[in-house]
Length: 298
Image (cartoon, rainbow, N blue to C red):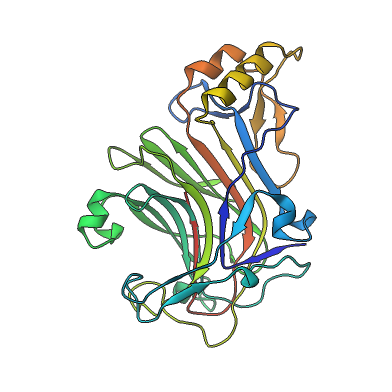
């Protein structure tokens, strides 16, 4: 079962019992490891319904044209989120989000920008900040916006998109290749929500559309690594890590839909010393139709 989506919000926080001291990535600024204590993982191919996974909520709300800064209002309905075993059809746009308005990380696809004849497939990498708010929510007028051309067709098969949100910096990847590395005071500093969203509101400067026929984005899996802010949860994790009998209780994040957890050999003492934030990994296939907007946000 694969997931075509309109708007999904991640809710539950899960941890694997196989990695008692957490999950690690290499520090981009050194040889040390950055460790995350919690993991949320959903493989939609293994679900018959969204509610079965207990980790996601199919959202039900509307946004007026004025509030959405477009020509049309938007309605997000749970019956537009389904699980099935087929590849997506044609479509308009997607966002991956870690969301808090002026503290927002976006990976955005605008299918109206795709040029299939010439093999041009741009992806928009965005960090919304107070500066972008002051510019009318236009991050392109700040230093936290990058439009990068992908070296593959995102509509022909499943590809993996990822961002690593670390203190003061955000790194963006596609199929394991680093696309952009943003740093500085405009990077998010507070918590948010993980959202997958597919929409179009007729804004000619951004989402375009709406498409003239149904557009579907298909998501295969989502993996998020983070640290719980609950003091009770932190105590439980510290105790579990301390009691671990494994020689290497920290597992490495490899970033693919295969078995991505390998022994990392990190010292459990590193856990309490690292101020890590979040790693998000999503596998999806974009629709072919023009005039849609796919949005992956934290």
